[in-house]
Length: 167
Image 1 (cartoon, rainbow, N blue to C red):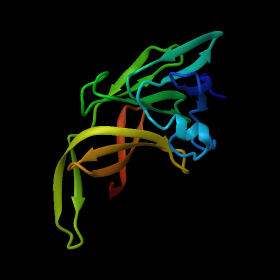
Image 2 (image 1 turned 180 degrees about the vertical axis):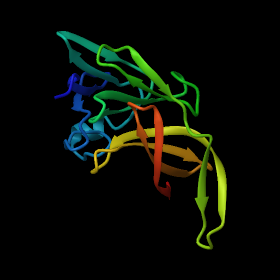
Image 3 (image 1 turned 135 degrees about the vertical axis):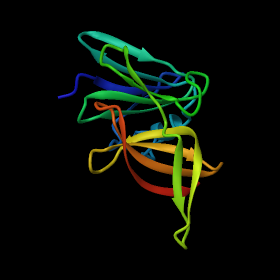
Image 4 (image 1 turned 90 degrees about the vertical axis):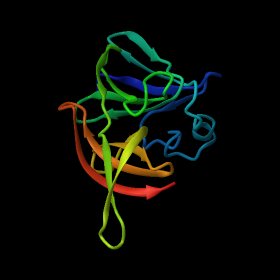
């Protein structure tokens, strides 16, 4: 059981949606009216209860995911809160920062002929838990490309690159 009780997004007008990506109101994956209303990642809070206290973080931009294996909250935030490309952090249940996530320096992409090119990571764009319970972070590169890569919040290390796509 998680230590982050009632983990949710809260809009500036008070609308609430769970961070849980399987919920239809989740703004990253859902398509309900609430999900659409909260899909703008600017100026919304992430809130939860722990040990009888409500904790609220209100970065100027945020996507959140609860790592089910480490029971840690991962936030990808905008450049007003943390400078690109290292714009993500891991949060403990009491609201303190566990650590800042440092983006890998490069993404390696291969073309159809097998030629590889290295690109600088520009920023982290979002975060979610995939169907294999892996924490996955989007890494933007080359202006309109995204690489999805797993991250181990407990060990503070990057895992495999899962896929790359163009926005």
